[in-house]
Amino acid sequence: MPQLTANDLKVRGIAAIESALAEQTEATISVRGKDRFVVMDMAQYHYLRECELEAALIQSRADLDAGRAIQESADAHMARLDALLNNTAH
Image (cartoon, rainbow, N blue to C red; front, top):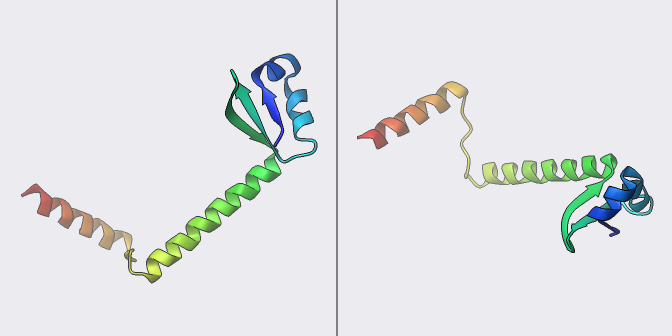
């Protein structure tokens, strides 16, 4: 993964980022010798977001299948929360 420094950005601005992303989809930005940030093009960002959302959906389905979640209407959910609050208030 290409690496940019904070000074590269200060001197060259967006051109430094464009240059770093010409061959790779991501680049790190270091500040005082330590990696601090990652920049990427929007297509890569959208791809990673889709992967993240797909993983969350898979986990949610696994939770439902394993009985670790409750499926109920909004009214039933509110009633259950009220009952829980009332039981802990005493």
